[in-house]
Length: 277
Image (cartoon, rainbow, N blue to C red; front, top):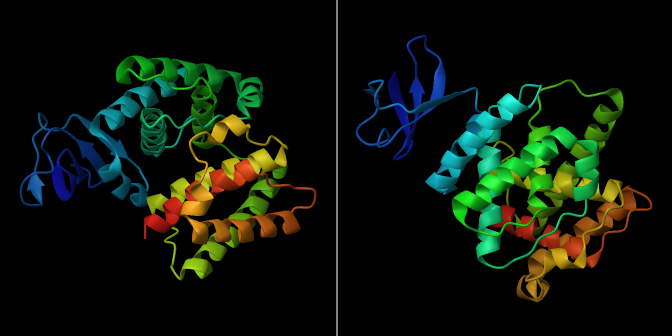
């Protein structure tokens, strides 16, 4: 196997003997001049077909969280009766890293759809419970039980399957709305959001969670935004952007009301996509 591009000290883009590109993990394989040949002993793990936009995200992920996500994805693939996207290892690691960071800072973010997710996706929810229990044991942090439902949604979103006509129509409407609100952010802050970047993929995922809550009328519990009070005052420009986004959503989707708690949740993700530029 030939390493052709360093991602970080322990991850590199490689080309295998058949000419296929992959990500390879192994202690220290990112050191040294590129390209270079790797021995089998140096490579601990390989990942094929991961979208290139996720490559840059690996630098922001703690190594222990990424390693944990790898083990979780192995478990999920044996427990689920369908194939999941290779990108799951990165998206799950990003979700877990963010959840652990919130827990360390005593920020509570509850999930109002937890019960619905448990009822709609019972198998994925059980896998989520297993992963959550392992995360608590591994990282010695008291993660909220709602994280099991959030993990279950990560799994369902990673499912490789054909959508129904109804799902396709809803997805198309959400695609249009996602583009609309992203354009508002771009215009407000005079920036160009790279739709091929991992930062955008993460932002888009959280926006779709918001759209799902609005569609099912499952507003955030006030306890979900404990620790976020005062953010509107600290980030007035971003909050003004959120207000414009809310007006657009409510005008486009009749009978939709975005609560103040949802505005704070939206403020977090608008701020994150701005910071990434």
